Amino acid sequence: MFIMKKISWLALFTAAAFSINAHAAPERVGDFTLIDDAGKAHQLSKYAFNKAVVIVSQASGCTMNQENIARYKQLRTNWDHRGVSFLMLNSSVDDDRAAIRAEEAVWNYDFPIMDDDAQLVANALGVTQAGQVVVVDPVRMNVLYRGPMPAQWARAPLGQVLEAIVADGADSRQMDTVTVDMTEADGCALEFPVAEQYMAEAPDYETEIAPILIERCVGCHVEGGIGPFAMNSHMMIQGWSPMIREVIMTNRMPPMQVDPAVKSFSNSGNIPTEERQKLIHWINAGSPRD
Image 1 (cartoon, rainbow, N blue to C red):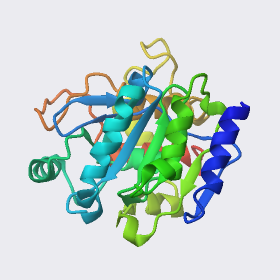
Image 2: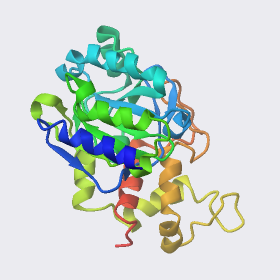
Image 3: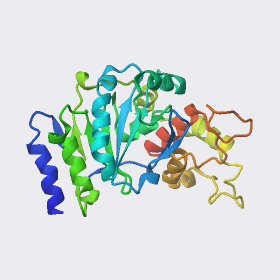
């Protein structure tokens, strides 16, 4: 524990040029599954054989992403053999899977670019700009770093955090979440219109949430049904809301979900993006009745 704290605080004192916030305990993020530009699914918990996952926020046309490609690749070269995996996350409202593929074809990022079309993963990770880098412990689901891609990462908080988590005996529960403030020059601003809408006013249970659950879930989640609990009251749904959020974020429920970019089926279990956003933002707001 002493070693972990020493490294963490060393990052703070050796990076005076950065605006840094260190939390008393690491922030946590829930498990999630997203499909990348090549059609491959990535579930955070499936990276548990790694010591850390580095996630770079990306957007088509973002000059900061494009200018940092060599730095991203150098970072991977230095860390992937030490138990660190690398992914990109596209949460731009202006991009779809085709736009992501077109950007990759021109710029050759050479990283899996996950399509966060509902922006729910970006919200969970605290991402606000393309170009932002997040380091996550995929075992404990702790966020260890959130900030820009530094020109000299080895001497910056990003490098200090990576050194700490790959050290023998490292335990992210004894580390802090190091947040380095992003400036406009560090990345490209992302818009989150749905999150802003529901932050101002959560979706209404009676008129917005209940109809989705009736349409997508209640067929199995009834008394005597094959679902593990019955969605027969607001109290029951509220009590199970953490699990509901997890199975939606990991695409485990409803069953038989098919990547619409590959093919559409009339009986697929996919929940439309707008409905996923309503459900998750409602749960994040505390699953209110009124």
